Length: 450
Image 1 (cartoon, rainbow, N blue to C red):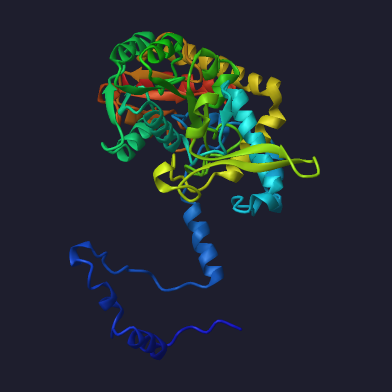
Image 2: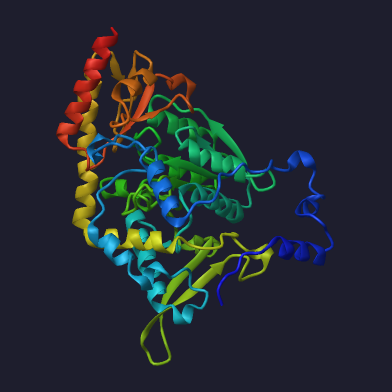
């Protein structure tokens, strides 16, 4: 049967059937102040004309000509993605699969999720991981709810070295009926900042959230903070870039109870901001408080290997009041990308990529920090990001560099005291020549404005 557009008579007949004379009457109960104005849409286009129009719009986008000209991070990073990741994830049996509502007939998808859980558990050094979450922000919120449910306490402590976007999710989701927050400002010395946070922990604290590396790229030892949390019966939640664990001590090894973050660095392109894939892993004793779903391995009646949904702690499957979360899905395809990436890279490739990020960032710090009129804001150990202060307006730098070179993230929008600062990210895709070019252009800019 072919589609036939509705005529005016058809529309009038349908409106009459529901007892109104015009579509506007259907919205009479909505206060006029809340109604959106009528959309002033252009005339409809044919398919060919629409494609041409979309191409014209896409041509207006500006982006660096090469990956090496891109120094933006702050939670989403450009990394090399092996071609096999796209090849495997584009297979129809994976690409069209949504989520295993009938798990007994979704063995392939369940196995992929099980292997993802295993990989995340190994990367974080913790006993168990779930089938993924939406992104790092929601994973941090879910971890905070876990801590509240486990400890029966309401207080969550974190400081402003936690990614501003993650803090915004906590503020918007963390209603007072669930838990409260005590936010401390950052310290110039990462270790001193952790000591300040540790001093706030008491017998009413459910958990401390610490980013590792923090938003400024700094790395500090969290072992003492974990001990302080446990001394007071609180949990330590570590939010971290999983790729950094290729060279840093993983959270589970220094006593973290829960590790969360974004798996985006593991084989996911930026995609204008998503979709990404949040991960959450925890100590074995906390398994039953994990949100979402957990896939387990078993044997069937014939003794053959099989996979099942072992834990489904969400309100769709269990009593609402007992649900650990109302998360309604998993980022299965994104989780698969992370799994394929980790499998292809292996332990050696994973570590080498992390080492390249670490070494190239150290080189960039040395080169950019030596430019007259620019200075490094924080000392100590860093992973792949650092903060650079300029003695000239940061926006002038962006105008001078143009759209084909991205020098970093302006920090003034979140930290007024850092209005003259850039957060600069370096990955394995930034070659030495790219960093040298950045330093040369920055030197020219600073010299021209003096």
